[in-house]
Each structure stands twice: as C-alpha cells, then as structure tokens.
Amino acid sequence: MNNDIEKIIKDGTLAPSGENCQPWKFSVSGDRISIYNLPEADRSLYNSKQKGSYIAHGALIENIALSAARYGYDAAVELFPTPAVPNLVSVITLKKATPKIDPLYQYLEKRCTNRKDFSGKKLSTEQKNALIAAARETGFGELRLIDDAPSLAKLAPALAVNDRLIFENKLLHDFFYGHILWKDEEQDKAGGFYIKTLEFLPHQLKGVQMMKKWPVLKIMNKIAGVSKMIAKENAAKYAASGTLGAIVVNGDASKDFVNAGRAVARVWLRAASLGLSVHPCTGVVFFNEQIKDGGAANFSEAQRLMIDEAYKQIVSVFGAEGKTIPMLWRLGFADAPTARSMRMPPVITHE
Ligand SMILES: Cc1cc2nc3c(=O)[nH]c(=O)nc-3n(C[C@H](O)[C@H](O)[C@H](O)COP(=O)(O)O)c2cc1C
Image (tube, rainbow, N blue to C red; front, top):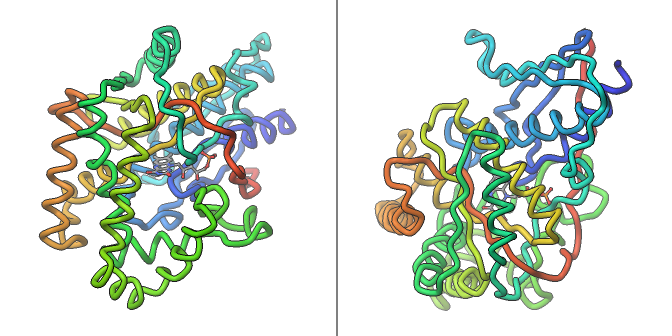
C-alpha cells in the first residue's frame, strides 16, 4: 500500500497551481492520506482567503482519484474534516477495488499550460461538448464557452487588465518577479514560473529583465506607457485565441473552490486528450475576490475601478451574475510550449 500511495501522491502533484506554488504537504497513516494547505506558499493578491490554492487542491484531489483508480483503489474524499485545523483541506481514504484506468489518467503528465499565441481556430462542436461534459462529470461546475468575435473583443481587454496591473501595482510586480525561476536547475527546488514557460520572445525578454527594477519600470511607464502597451498586446493575443472558457459555480465558500478545482482538472485533462492548448487568464477574477474579501487597500482607486469594470464585463459575457468564476482559460490550438514546468518532490510524513 505505501508504495502505491507514494505513486498516487506523486501523480496528484502533477496538478496545476497558481504560479506553480504547489501549496500542499501530505501525511499518510495506513490507507489514509491527509492533505494540508501551505498558506505561506502563495501570499499573493491572487490568493485571497487561499481561494486560488484551494482550486489547486481540488485539481490535486481529482488527480489522486484518477491515479488511485489506476492502482486499484476507490478514493473517498472528505473536505475540511476538522474545523479546528483549517489547513487540513482533505482526507482521502483508499479502499481496495478492481483497477480501473480512466482514459484521462494518461494525460496527468501531458496536461500543461501553454502561453504561446494560439492559431485562432475555434473548437469544433464535438470538442466543446466533450469539455462541457468533463466539467459536468464532476458534478461541481459548469463550463461556459465563448467564441463569437464581439464577445471575445469585450473579454480580451478585460482579461488583460491583469497584465497591466502586474506592471503598475508594486505588490503584484514584486510577487511576479519573486516567483520567476530564471535557471533550469532552480525548477524542482522552489515553486514559481520557469521563465521559458512564460513564452517571452527574445526582444521582450530584455524588457522583462529591465522592468524587474520598480523605479526603472515607473519611469518606463511614465515616458512610454509600457504597462498599457503590454496590456494592449496581450488583449490582441487573447482576442485572437479562438475560444475562451470559464468554469462557473454557485457558492464562494472554501469547499466550493476546492470542488471547482476538480472540474478545472477534468476539463484541462480532457482538453489535453483532445490535443488542445490551454492557458488560464484568471487574474481579474481573483482581484475581484481580493477586493470582496476586504483587500481593496492593496489597489489604488483607479486600479479598483479598472478591476471592477473588467470583472463586470467578464461576468456579463459569461452570463455569470450572482455566481463565482474560479477559472478562465484560453482554449485552442498552438505549437507545443517551449518548456514544461516541473514539480518539487512532495513532502510526505508517515504517521
Ligand atoms: C487557480 C489557478 C489560476 C491560474 N491562473 C493563471 C493565470 O492567470 N495566468 C497564467 O499564465 N497561468 C495561470 N495558472 C497556471 C499556473 O501558472 C500553472 O498551472 C503552473 O505554473 C504549473 O504549470 P502547468 O500547468 O504547466 O503544470 C493558474 C493555475 C491555477 C491552478
């Protein structure tokens, strides 16, 4: 059992997480895996009340369930079983069963984020239906897809508000640069974005390195409007992506974000199985959560207005009034990503 559990946990940690922060650790006792959140892994404005990390935990749980079935176990999942220990996100109990290989299992390793330009080709009806069904299978979220030009034209600049604010808000800027892994050999030692996965073109990379220094960036924004230029370029890239998708759920409690993460994982794995490229563009929806949860002071008034307007636009295009949007993606066709992000070895203690 122990050997299987280690393999199952390792498969689990192939799950996506914001900035690849991998906010989890594990404790194993017999047939039980206790999974703890690490709040310090992501202190960013994207992670108000750990909501971003909870989505990652949901994806981790979905991966674990797929892997457990492969190794011949049913996985019974309990969320937040001990209110006095809020970081204990889930306890998964494995029970021997006949091995069952879900067709999505083989995509755990293949799923990834692709930040390249997409071709603009839209998904076929079959592809759309397969992704919508994947979200539905979990029972935890609905996938809504948008591919008409007028709606894409409204959504694209709204999503790109994130990219502008990374270069205008010092907290976001410092977090972003603090989480870039510049060297290959740093990759399995810390969470963060491996620089090559960010897909900057050689001429852009130089600028990105210069803008690491906040005072330099402030001057560049003043004389050349760099942050606005970046947002404009990225908005064009988003509008030309072909299809944008959002997971829409009803609640906004911690467990709703964990459960939404299960739908996120399944849709993403299904997309990988269809040969589709996937790129989350979620900043604005998480800034909205940050402001809603009392973190408005982390943004200037002008920034809050920008976020509010962008968020309203996103909600209106996806028809998600009164609901929560825990994930937003570009979905489509692109060359393979230049590089893949790696994972740190999971921390597992045995009780
Ligand atoms: C909740 C959540 C939000 C994310 N938001 C973004 C985003 O806004 N932009 C982006 O480029 N990647 C985003 N990502 C992708 C992660 O950066 C990515 O999953 C992580 O770096 C690991 O890489 P991989 O998906 O290739 O395994 C998000 C992932 C999660 C789970």
